[in-house]
Length: 113
Image (cartoon, rainbow, N blue to C red; front, top):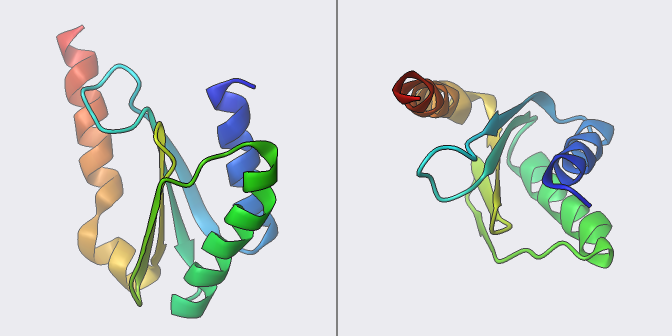
């Protein structure tokens, strides 16, 4: 299974469980800790945790590895090695503007090419 197939499966699972504003960043050509980053917005803390648990339940049997999961009230980060998943409530997503950071990194690298 390709990385793009894996990302599509992750996005589909998040979408099925009412995650919103799902964005995928391809950082394969960038010096970053992961090749892909998935950002999504949850309805709140319990929903974030439930989304993370759902991903584990659905994806582990298919061979996906969850190297580390870090949970707080407003943000869950899942490290799958070459994929990072950020599940954030809307306030955290607005506060940290992670998509702006990731877009800037990607754009900077593309300008160097």
